[in-house]
Length: 340
Ligand code: KG4
Ligand code: ZN
Image (tube, rainbow, N blue to C red; front, top):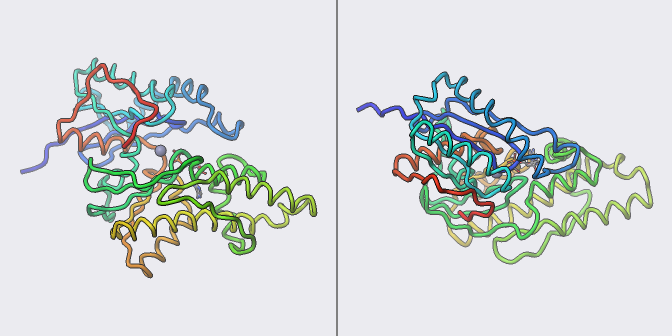
């Protein structure tokens, strides 16, 4: 029998991207993301400005997603939205919008945990992509999160470790800022690192027990190192930019790979799925490829547009919850802190 087509509208507004997507079952029909440029001048996300920008963006972004999918809102079977975790003022915009639309159209409302969505993004139907088999280890690495999760089933996940302070993307962005690079500096560190020597300078790796992470000490270490060097040579940064970027990136990747190796050793699971904006880093991609060859791991990285914050990943969770009949009530509230 042919599978019935179910269209789900998904909304993501947990941080600084306003996004809406339309899925037909597990396939993405449209995925629109409005990135808020306003934060660039502040070197980081300003929560109040983010929620104001979501207010302005949400209606046009949803319209665009429906237009691109070439469907009318009356064809929608359900609405999925990010309930948390994230910035409360940002989450409120998407939550209120989704609740009103579900009430107006009289269709089910589905709440989605943003961290589960980063992981289940691997199940978006894509030509020539392999979906991970359960159980697998998911490492979500972005400007807002750093987590290793044991994924036993779609909705059976256990956080094995996470950052105790900064997220790994922040470590990239804050290091970049110290080097005078604009925000977000992660992609620029990646680009400069390609021309540098990763062993040129050594930075101390944090000593954190188990599978938790810490990145704030690394940033301080880099700051002191740069202060010392520029006292001796004011042009130190410009003269050594590629080597510094390569060394910073190398240290961050060592931290991530050490923890992944520990997670593999502890669980005996060699299926690894990476997500989040930092998964775009060319160095981590190389290291994972190397681990496939040398350690026999199976690794998965979704398409870039499903790595960074996007509504398509909210939609795939919405689809699986729809199949389970797992719907939310109108009185549901956004949650800034929301464990997997
Ligand atoms: O997932 P994302 O778009 O938003 C958050 O939820 O944070 O991730 C953005 C983060 C930023 O910190 C950015 O610098 C980092 O991902 N990033 C990268 C690269 N591309 C994006 N970091 C290192 N190398 C990259 N190529
Ligand atoms: Zn995210």
